[in-house]
Image 1 (tube, one colour):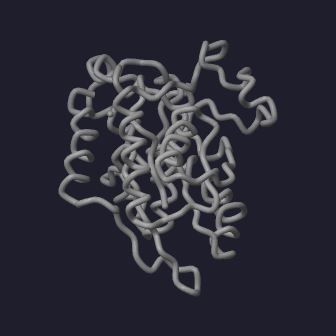
Image 2 (image 1 turned 180 degrees about the vertical axis):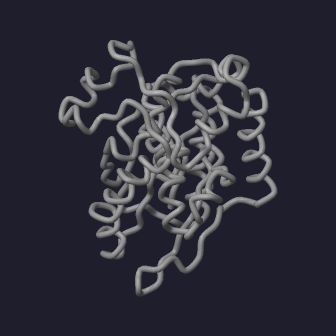
Length: 244
């Protein structure tokens, strides 16, 4: 099962967040708790949880687990981090559209293989100096990323670390971010790169995958009513109209 983290304080401010370690908003806290209740009602009990190293994903996982009433192992990895937005990090989305034009910003945000401009040297968002990544070689910390780059770091981690848990028969919950999960969804649902830009994963909305004996995805879908899910997905898309 996968969940995108709940609505964050920077979602609320309409800022490009990426690797910036921001908190959940009050709305996001409520979303995470609701997600936990929905998972509990479904009967899904996670044996292990994977998250990024960013607190909005970790807190979403912890809040959901409290509602489910279990305390499984939680494994954190930077490889499940949100996409790195490069020089766009910290910028207001609406202002960025006004400066560069909606078409250009849409290319940076949603094209599969065109990254935003790289982060400048000595930026206050230089994550190579962040203690959170002290055990990660500087050469692996990006200056910017497109979705293709995110796929390149997420899929090997899934195959090497997460898939063995699934093959062992364990129930796995992954709590991460819009783009790191979109990278995984491409693989699981066989969505072509030219179509993935149209896929919108709403915040804190559990999506369940079931695998057959050959480790192929047998069924997938949200636990909630599709109409409600699509309303939340549209709300995310509407952010782009004024800016994501």
